[in-house]
Length: 106
Length: 120
Image 1 (cartoon, each protein chain N blue to C red):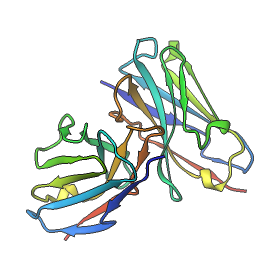
Image 2: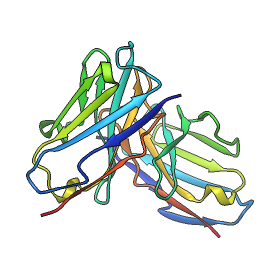
Image 3: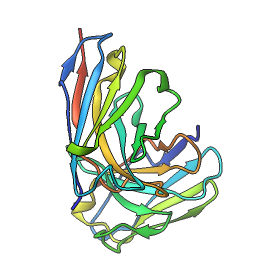
Image 4: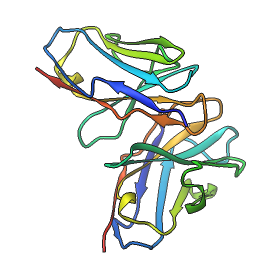
């Protein structure tokens, strides 16, 4: 199965700061998905097909990448963005998730 | 709108069978290209895909757990079911059901999750 390695594991950002989370795949994948999970809640789809925003997601979020390297960027950090973020692939069975990046508000 | 909700026993003992129910609205497993997927979140493995059942009763299982998993559905009552046999403490975690669409590789809609604890 494809292993997704996220970095950093934990990070903190001040309001207005730019945040980038990376996801490296053990083999090439054609697309990446990103989820946001706040404490006590279920994951919420943020980005699908590498760079498309899910419905209702603010445009300060963006995704990019190809092959084995993908990233999620928050252009300007807001307090409500403090959460754990996960990448996910299903280019190869079974679908797999990264271990998560915890983003804290500084 | 799509809504899903999981229910289960809460706590069970090692070697027992875990039975979970996903009750949903806003879509039907009687409709082509619809499915319900199961994902769990454990402290040991994080988010882990388990299985999907499709409108035509086709099923897909994570090979790492294949032999322990059973999925089924009750189309008339908008429910899907997951069974995991011979549980142990590593199966402790939160279990989610999700809507699945043919051709979609992401998980758009998730239930709130149900916590399952395996303990003797």
